[in-house]
Picture 1 (cartoon, helix red, strand yellow):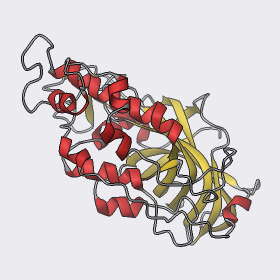
Picture 2 (tube, helix red, strand yellow):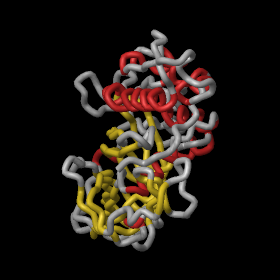
Picture 3 (cartoon, helix red, strand yellow):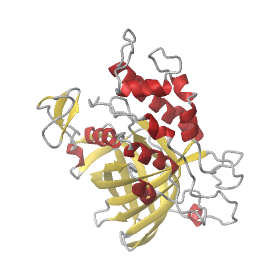
Length: 354
């Protein structure tokens, strides 16, 4: 399902001014992470819910609020280096949140949460599992009411789906049923405790989806060392933050190609190789061309994005999570291998079999 909207204005100065600073020092302190020994109590009941929001850190305040201590460093103030990049882009009017909101509303992004606990107010051995979902009942969107006007709808709750204004988010009103996506990892459980209705748990591996561009499919990211801190309501729904780190491999195979697709779409929408200049002044395509079109042929390739010095400097790992053998073993060799990210999220009740 393709959502129709204008691409965000991409400002070159946003990336030029970004500096990634890791809050943790990646020290080799000899402290074992007790969370590694946590197990989930199999006697706990399951409480299902579905994400209604997946909030990016769009301000420096949110970057700090969503930051979490991913590598277990006892002197760490919180890790969210990629969140710092996103916050800087947002301050330059780059809208990365709207594509995520629209893809959640349309059901193109479905993330499910399952809390397993003996009590939602005070319990040990609690499990929080995040899964990718599909086949919502009711369906995410209803019947189109009319054509979009300049890529927008005037009626609240309607979004542009294939150029038509359509009521969506129908599966997010509470109580909808879902299937779990076949390729959703089955071992994505963060173990922890609930104290006073607040869950803290991790580390684990959690798979989430983000949209850099509403006209392109979401990208799938595997958050390693994932941790979550949420308030748990009486119905088992949660609200809080999720943090983890993206490996260098995922940066290279998911994030960078996602940026490349965003740039290619902008060039295709805004520019004409037969014109001189090929991109209108101030257009999104023109901004991307200035940033990535190394050979000035009014086209952008994946290789041009991969080798761009700004991209390679911005998307640098800030955490050491893995040892030389590839095992999850934070801070053992001070070799930065993962890029931290923290986001916020909320859920409503749902039904599925975890």
